[in-house]
Length: 226
Image 1 (cartoon, rainbow, N blue to C red):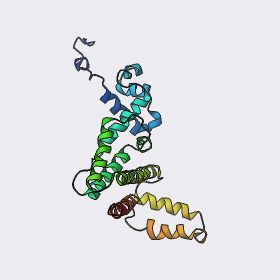
Image 2: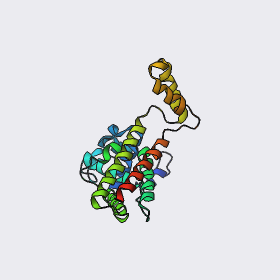
Image 3: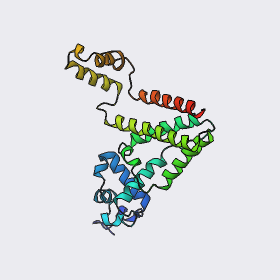
Image 4: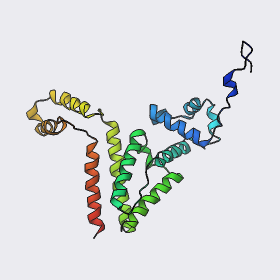
């Protein structure tokens, strides 16, 4: 269409990218990352894509289907365990999962509630079980290990996402502010933890993840040999 000065409008010459399920899911994930999962509605996803909400139903059946697809996208970002050393494979996979959940802080609470897991989710779960079985775990022990590792990862991710601080410096300031309001002798163990651990140079709460993960992997190693 010509513009007011008689020339063609450049934006009219750019074809709009066709709407499809992948675009809908990526837009919903981006919205959840920015504003939280409660903000994800068909109307707001449609607005982000520049279309009416009803257009989305050609690609997702309903909001449940939308959430299923969003979770599947997050699973597609997590490294699947590979290699002959099951513990190292689980370690890499755990760190990759934690990073994905840090990028998408809404996802941990949804991952184990999906009734229609997508292909990326199923491939991921199958790879985890296959790695554990190849590492010598019985089917029952593989199930125990899978549940234990994921409970730890998801629980840590939820805890980390809801902490009132992010950096070690912010953690130290938060701890000092809390303890300044109470006599030290009234809460001696909290005072000791703050003084001897949180306020030490280089403190980073995220390092707790590695400590707990190694305890779990060591315990599984011992259990799998009996």
